[in-house]
Amino acid sequence: MAKKNKKNTKDESGNRLIATNRKARHEYHIERVYEAGVALRGTEVKSLRQGHASLVDSYASPEGGEIWVHDMHIPPYEQGNRFNVDSKRMRKLLLHRSEINKIIGTVSQTGYTLIPLRLYFNARNRVKLELGVCRGKKAYDKRQTIKERDLDRDRDREIRDYRRD
Image (cartoon, rainbow, N blue to C red; front, side, top):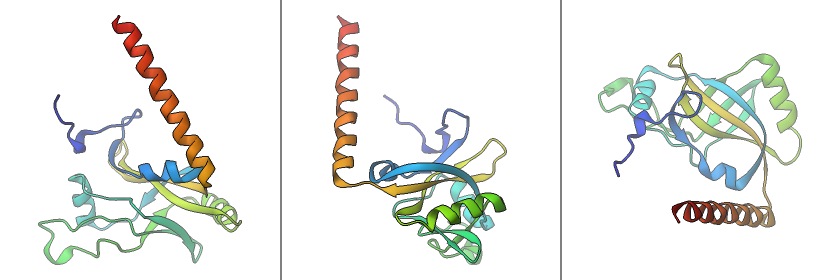
């Protein structure tokens, strides 16, 4: 079986996927999802076009009436020389003022946090970040999620085996 090229991975809506935070769906209950633009420098976009990025351990927070993403790793562009910037710098998220106000109101409540879920190029070749307003899962919630996933996998395996016979 041929290995999929990471650069050509597209989701169901035709967006070209750069990075996902698969751990977030296991660690958090996702209450609401927002799509935000990301303010980037030119060499960062070139690095993203090569499919290089990581959302592991990244988070977002409101500061000064704006939303900023922290610890999102975009490695330096190899041909970027002096125009490269710090790979883990804070990056501003571009949202409508009403969305920012809703997010700040929700995150100010105890237990909510902002977690980046996916980073992708949309149909107009703009870099977008799917941002989730999340609440942390307890240990028993994680066990329940694992149990449901295993049951789904077993059910799918039974159906597949039944169709083969």
